[in-house]
Image (cartoon, rainbow, N blue to C red; front, side):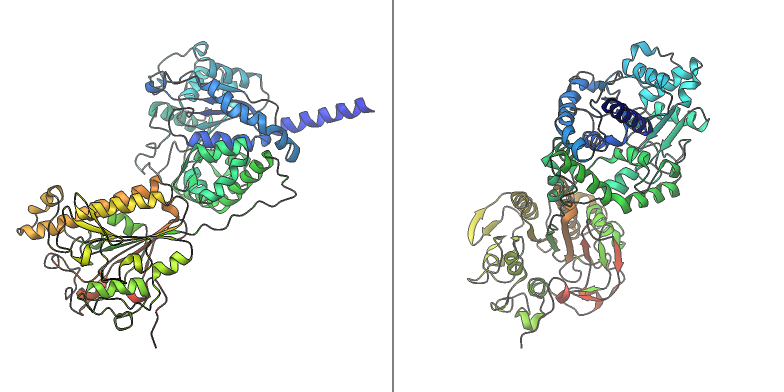
Length: 636
């Protein structure tokens, strides 16, 4: 009876194995090779691998010559993935089941060979052991072998070329290629050149050859496009807290640390195996088998993956926790408390609504402001005070002038009522780090300084003296600090350093610049492009100051991205009052300037960017500066 039971178990096991899709995975990644997204993508595949019959995972499939002398990728993969898989396998089989005993890893035969594929060259597979191994695997199989393509298609093209030259179409009929991002009109590629994508750059000839053979019917090639990046990665959960949960298992840690950037893990090539599984929104039935990738199809598949992106991530997390010994049936996947967003409030000085490329300026170049405009909720009917100090007080209090106590730019009419609880005080009580770097202009008298009104750090000018843009004397919490350089650069440098120092603590960074308030002077490299546009030297400096501010906004954006916190940082950008020096050049069709109540004196731009939560759009409802940061209050 025991013998019969053992035979029955063996039969059921073999039957289940035969029903799993056979997979041969080819990755252009590895240790110190290319984009580390493949490191995460291979780890996530291994967590899901009980659903596949995996025959081999090939690493380092890239012809770039600078990769030739990298360490042996088979050895690295065995020591990294192989050891992690072996350590996690028992728990995975205990709680989930179906994981095979061993994983076969290989180094690609084309690693660093330097030459692109040539359709005219006669390839001998004996010189390419990893390709020969795939050929032999297909030859011995009675079922379809699915080749997941995590990168360029050089190995695949050599195999297809060999089979066609040697009349082995029988091999090709048992073969199915599933590729990611070798063709897209939506992302990186264009309608006229859809092949100009990340995974075709390395060997464009091989990519073109594979697609030609697919179009001719010689092979099946399923092109996913960019749906892994924009459907799974960008639409999945964000936040270090979520992905830190993976680090309790060996495979989960590799997945979480392989490529963690922009506040999420990037394993975009995983789209290939999710599509092969077919039960998470997109299947191979939704993708053409002849290599074509029409934009409407890619857009639909991207949207369908996006709807299930969290489910896919949660399934990986469930498996990672099972690998660490947590029984999935006894504990639901923990959902971390939503991480509070960071807040960056940018305020420009004396920049008008029209002083921006995206608002129609005839020659002013502001690419970073334009990008912020395009990625934000844009309040198109936003009004501020005709002068700056009342606007600044409203940002800190939610109150209009006569309630905040700030009715003008001069002392004592710029001293903010000391009985008011300010925005940074509210945020500090909520656990935020708070920092100001720039123009306070709400009095530097004792009891009124920014570090006495809720800011942990207040780096600004003494007594709100704004006359020197170069080598300014600054005060940090009332203590003099000597500096060198251009003032706006100094404030941005200091803010970026402070942001980095906060680590995982949420922060409120208030960065009100002095650009482009007089005296009108900017570094020469920013002024020079505008001397030919305007006759007045001061006006050229005015535009140069805005160009400097634009570059600093770009530096700050890049810094947030490098820290991996851009997606969970709310960025607000406004100007403080109506236009000034630039209005005679362009005032967006409005009448009036700073200090007047005409439209040109009070209309301002207002951008709110939070990639993790908000889709860019125009908000046309009128909004006042007193409503921007806090509920509007009134002192009775």
